[in-house]
Image 1 (cartoon, chains in turn green, purple):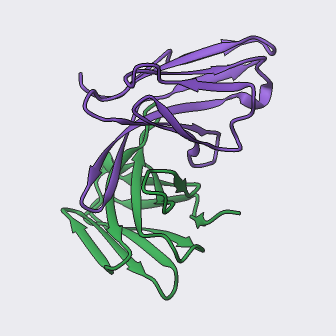
Image 2 (cartoon, rainbow over the protein chains, first blue to last red; image 1 turned 180 degrees about the vertical axis):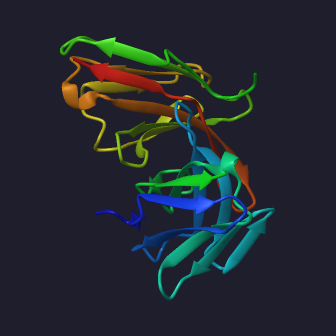
Length: 113
Length: 115
């Protein structure tokens, strides 16, 4: 049962343009959502999070939007930079008070110079 | 370097052999996690420690797998009688609690190949 889904395995964007990565979820009990970024041969790195009581969270070039009625969230990166090229995972922790996190399958972003 | 450290980075073994991985978390973090990632998938939760206590184990963690955190600091993950299906990246993470949930800090992982 894939509770967090990323349906686009890859995305290519020109440098300077906006990157939009999408994520859908099925469990309406998730309290908050996370985005992680992963470079090859490295572990995932936390990028940004959003509480389920909010619909937007912004951190510099990164903004996450949450649409609870659609059970959908998206990560916007603007402007995109070549260093943003990585795999991006959408994730959500279970409600156990610790990080038993369900990750999506990831979207590989390539930012073309 | 104060990040999460994992050793070894790569391990190649023959089917049926035992392997052990080590994780050194960030020193002030009292929560430690093991995840496993296979090709084309996101990381999957394996187990979680609060200090030295192992508080949850995923059903993915068969009885061939054992994890310990003897003094609440470093942790080891042992796989006995390895199978080809165990081939994966094994990720360790430690965590810091934030106002909005926790933040996991992952190590670079141990890539296991079972031949």
